[in-house]
Length: 254
Image (tube, rainbow, N blue to C red):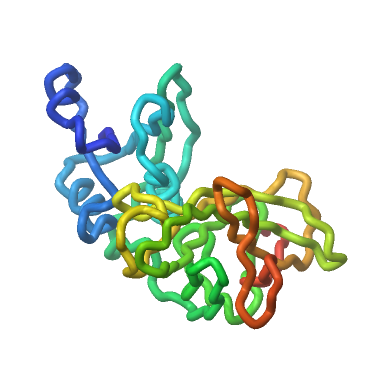
């Protein structure tokens, strides 16, 4: 089965596609997105592999749909590599689990990080594979698999500023060993500065550990910054740009 993000051009796709493999067009702004994907897979007979199309941004702009789908299938499937083409890649998954309801996360650990730029980080969910872990204690992470992270945000209405985040992993000596930056997008592909929206929204991230990362204790820190000026916003009352949001214990998979 193929899952193809980009429902806005579905009629063009349905006109052009001549293959026999079942295709479902998806959009992460759909209500109950994870359950909709699960339902589509459940209707397929003899499901052995799912191929998720990941478009390059200059072909179809899809916000962070690639990250949302990657997190979902990391939880309920097994990644078996990707096929790379000029304008897209196809991510392949097998061993699809349909024995429990699909959800992006089971619970949110509350956070209260209010920034002077008019945005707040209000919750965190994290895990590896199918298992979510509480961030109230160090996250037990094993080598060989990425970990997923869901962050819940709330913005002031008419914010007018587009924000990005920098996720940074530091060892117990305080040295940075990994940094990943992401622009924040709502599920409807709008940025934080667009419109008058103020309802909470989630950002989803699937993060690979470096192959040579030593085992040990780490801190996961975050910086929120303006995408235009690159100036960070700081936490109110603390007046620091970098905030620790979780601790990790990275160890052998055996």
